[in-house]
Length: 126
Image (tube, rainbow, N blue to C red; front, side, top):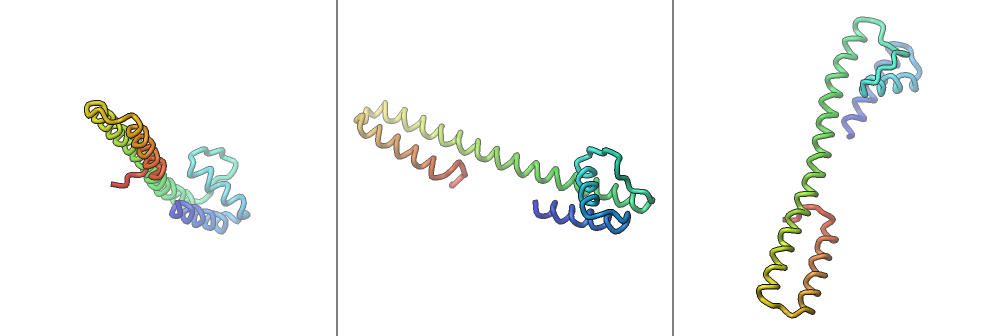
C-alpha cells in the first residue's frame, strides 16, 4: 500500500511539472489514469508524457494485482483457519459423545474452545 502511495506521488509530481498542472489536477489525473477510468478531461500531450503514462499503467497494474492478491490470500487464510477450527471442534464433539463425557464438562470445554477462537481473531496460530 505504501508502495502504491509512493508511485502515485511520483507520477503526480511528474505530471504536475511536465504539464504545468496544479497539484490537485496532477493527483486527479494520476488517480484517473491508474484506475483506468480515463475521463479525457486531462491528457498527456507530448510523446514523452505518453510513454511515461504507459509505464505508469504497467507499474500500477502490477502493484494493484499484488495488492489484490495479498488481500485475497489474507481473507482465504482466515477462512482456512475457521474451517480447521470447526473441523477440530467437530472431532472434539464426536469424542465427547463417544466417551460419554459429563454434560457440564462438555459445556465448559465448548466455552473454552469458543474463547480460543475469539482470542485468535481468525488468524492461524499454528
